[in-house]
Length: 386
View 1 (tube, rainbow, N blue to C red):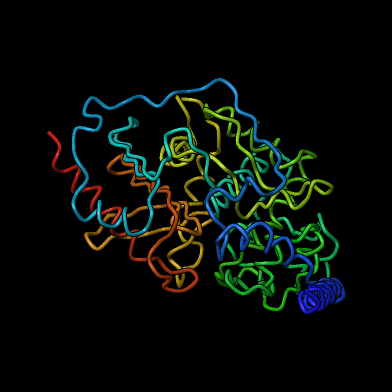
View 2: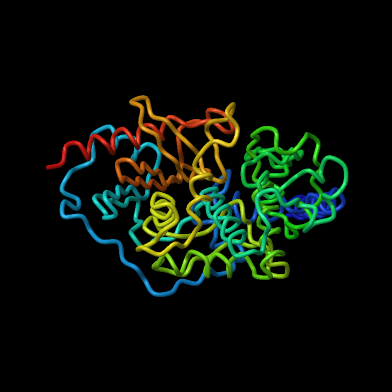
């Protein structure tokens, strides 16, 4: 018993010293990381982690139900798709054909109403909000300097950084996109309780507007610009601009840095369902129209789904661009664990996949193998229909 007491005293002292060290070195955000991620058995952010963070709410309005295709669920998944869905932990797979749900399946206890983390799919939504703010006159245009909103970026080469650079991932900042390092700025941004401070501490180290470099911090700074320009929180603006007009079924939690600050993690973390996420694919497929009403400027939509830089054909303004081996062209929303809304306007097809994991990373800004599988096997199903 004496040795046990001594051991416990030493353990308490070590814990106190560790916590003190984290605060002294300004890495106390790791305490939240341990509490919300590691103690729940994960090594990175996970589908249902919004339950462990503070959230704001994206309010829904009148629900616009997706119609069911006349051939709804008349075809089974291919054997390869079944295999990949099982191996990678798919929780939702959906094919929308001609604006009707042609096929959908849910797995692992999830269903059509289950809310899960969007991760970086929300970047496409934030870019859309920028387009909306431009059309409403809150922002002058893609070329308006970020320094007009935040003087921290109004000197030197930082003064050249525009809102369009943020949307197209061309800010030139020193953001380091690493998900699994506990000391990366990406990890800090996910757990820090003052996200504005983190972002305003970024430095512009390369000429803005010259090349694509994937950086979640660009989207976060863009969100901060939108909030300052519109005078609305991002949750309020997303609700008014898209969530309600597109007829989303459910209110959606959006993770915030803390209850006190309430700044949304704009580069990720809207908790929604597959059908509601798919609405953004349909909106862009239809050049900004929803049920005949122009919700988003068509010229902005068309610009968004074309490459900004010829040497980086995989990205436009907030949307990923993918060419399949058979020559079909897609644009898509993408998330950290294999969250996808994949759109082919020519075939009037939208494919949605949500899940626990994806194929091994091919590198930041590159496409993983699973994307091609979800497309190819989905088209095999479509081509086998009557």
